[in-house]
Image (cartoon, rainbow, N blue to C red; front, side):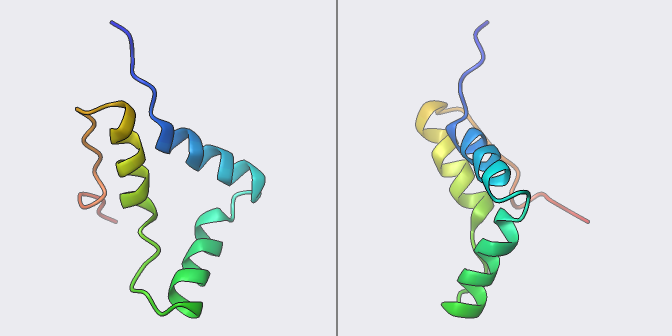
Amino acid sequence: MIKKIHLGTILKWVIEIISLGTGKYISQWIAIDLFGFESCKCCEREQWINRLTDKEFNGNCGDIKL
């Protein structure tokens, strides 16, 4: 079985490499502090991009518990 490409995950890795691991913190600072949003919606955006290439993809953004 061929595993489908998840573009959102690949994009997240590229951003983490370019920003030296601070991509999520930078996007949260821009979204919350500068624009006043509740969150940066990083996980939701990654899921949406993943679903472009894999229609059955079902991420767990809402299921993350600390």
